[in-house]
Image (cartoon, rainbow, N blue to C red; front, side):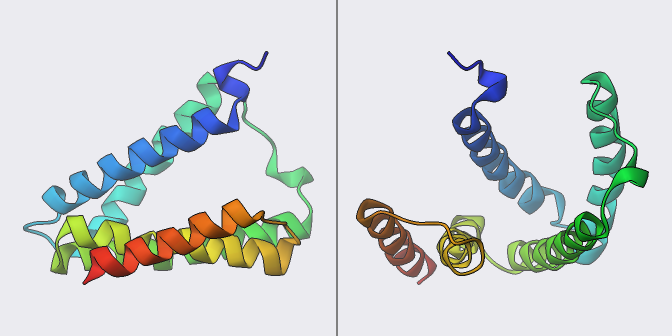
Length: 143
């Protein structure tokens, strides 16, 4: 039997919970400041937290052994994350969290499509039905 530490489902649900809390905390936190600057401050806070987590859980690694492919895709991920965070913070600054956060979840649909296109992942009919329902939900909530 897998422990919670080794369960992708546990970590996926945790990510969803914390993403929901993140949206609420951002919306309250950026009320009186520039959204782009808030992304910068948030990033400064995240860096030592992640470092402490890696040290505490004995997961620190030497980046010297990483391949150039690893570096490239981590850099591309960082660029995409930056664009996502700036977009998300600005959207939350301008719109209601109850609409912004669900619309941002169009990423669920795009991840499924990109996984199919670029990673050769396969989806069942049930998976596709879920993706279509998410898309319909995004459209309904976003209006």
